Image (cartoon, rainbow, N blue to C red; front, top):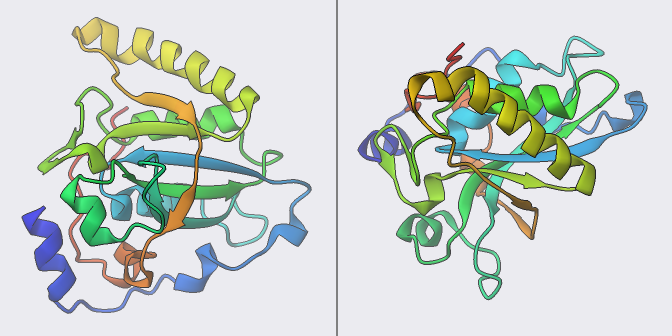
Length: 206
């Protein structure tokens, strides 16, 4: 958490990565699209690693059409939460990334596997030094089919990568509820601020 606060107030050199890429609507070039929502700790790093591995450009890209970071999975009584209230833990929201993707280019099962590969899903309400319910590991499914796939991939990843080590995945899998975009300065933060704070668990683990 301290690293994130320092990053927010420390000026950084601009990145060569063009920030509009992840927000530009290029759905017209996709045969169809779906929405995937993942929470794996600090949403800066979650968004960053997905876009680095599934870049939208050069066209047709590797499956991701657009992304946004935001808040979801919280109390129904709390509308339009902001960063301060989410960090307090009082709203129950998770920091998450909403991914619009083309399933003809990348499968939902591939995104779920990548989600597990790039954080630690065995720590409840924690990623690295970031502690709190807002940093929990969660998959918010947008269709019944996604729920089936998410549970299947979870079992496969558990058996292959965690059971041999004696650890257990604690990721929540639940239907997606209301989504709230985070403040503008959080969007594409690590592309705009390449020296900014990044959770050490946001890296390929296999």
